[in-house]
Amino acid sequence: MPYTALILAGGQASRMGGVDKGLVELAGQPLIARTLQALAAQSQPPQRILISANRHLDEYAAYGHAVLPDTLPDYPGPLAGLLAGMQAAPDATLLMLPCDALVLPVDFAARLLAALPGQQVVSASDPAQWHPSLLALQPGLAAALAAYLASGGRSIRGWLATLQHQSLHVAQKLPNLNTLAAVHQLEQQWPAD
Image (cartoon, rainbow, N blue to C red):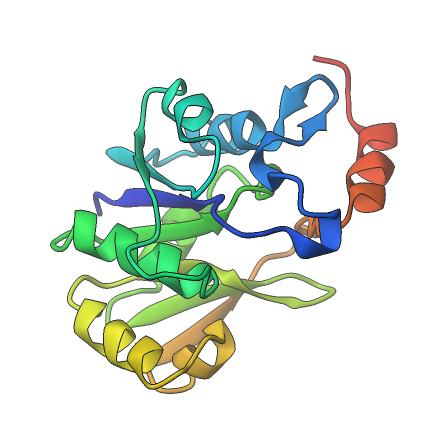
């Protein structure tokens, strides 16, 4: 199934002291570059990649993919980035992932996409936790998402509860880098490039 990947790098990163998370370096490369490498290594790579970003747009554009700022004001969260991606690729099956999704099984996209028929959305969970920001989504959900955001909804979990949704278990632990300390901890274990 062909798909478009949407990398979320548009948040305020408040738990990281407000730095632009996608540009934080891990072993000498920004997280966005590591995530793009993880996508390129997929057994089923994306046909197209979009990057949701609200700061440093030129730095993200230098990676050669379309950069989409939020279409809604005041940083309403990752769902605003998803809405911008849906509006930019209205007919595409989307694989949404945060900019710290830099360690993915090579069959990650293929497995989520294979589970998508009969569902509106498929998310990922690993042995430690559910990752609601790692999603495969059917096209045609933009109106429902816009309505959820217009009603004041901001939570990915809350929006998923309104949809036909399945969570797919992944045996490999997936990083969740919400603090600079978590990035530094992973860097200690990172293999040399």
